[in-house]
Structure formats: structure tokens, C-alpha cells
Length: 152
Image (tube, rainbow, N blue to C red; front, side):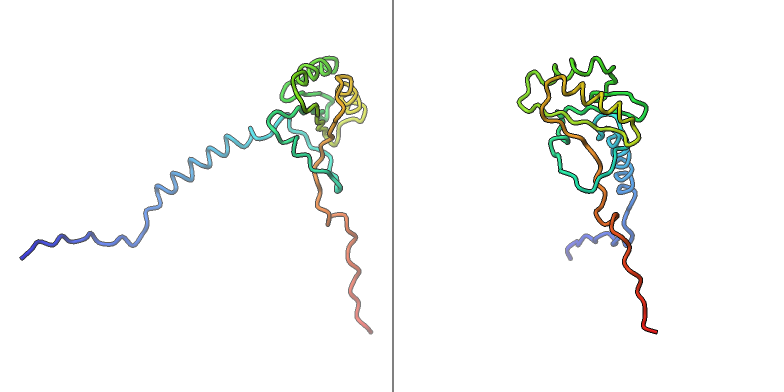
């Protein structure tokens, strides 16, 4: 009689501990990476319905000037005084073909601060200036539907 090895019994319950370990590692990775995805200083941008998509602003080498609510001006992640913005943008644009600069402004920033930042960017010789906003859904601004009335 030949020896026939027996198969181990079938496990009815899956082992979820390795899956839970992987999920925890992924959660930690996403928690660390997510804050780094925002380019520049976070600001609460103004909302607009009719916007143009500016894919160039999402590039890694895009030049973004941010104006915060309290009037501080940032070039990328670095806070700069207003008088240094023009020189720094000239340095950034010196060896580029695409000479576009994007301005992100907080919705509650003073209009005068935003104008000063735009003027400093224009003084650097920038011809293409993009003003970044957040897009609001189109259906938010629609009037409510008329009430449905029955014949009495």
C-alpha cells in the first residue's frame, strides 16, 4: 500500500491581520504625504463659477505667488517682503521659456495687498499672469424650482 499524504484541513476564516497591517502602513503614508501635496502656502481662495482650467499651475516648477489674509506675500513656500518679490521672480524666470506666474489670494485678503503683489509681479516683466480661484459647482447659483401647486 502506497503512502498518500493528507492535505491539511481547509481554513474557513481568512487571516486578516496582515491586511490590517498593510492598511495601517498605507494610512500612515497618506497622512504624511497629503500635507506635502499643496504647493505653496495654503489660502482660502475665492470661488468662481466661470473659470478657465490652468493645468500649468499644477506643474512642479510653476511659479506661484500667494497673498494671505493678513497681507503676507509668499513666493512658493518662502515669505518675502514686497520689495523683494520682483527680483526673486526675475531670477526664477531668467532661464525659462514659459514666463507665466500664478497668483493665489485668500478670499478675505485686502484688495490693495493683492494689487501690490500683482504690480510687483508685473514689474518683473511677466506678461502672462494667472489668477487662481476655486471652482464652484454651476448648480449652486441656480434659483430654486417653482413650487408645485395643485388645482383646487
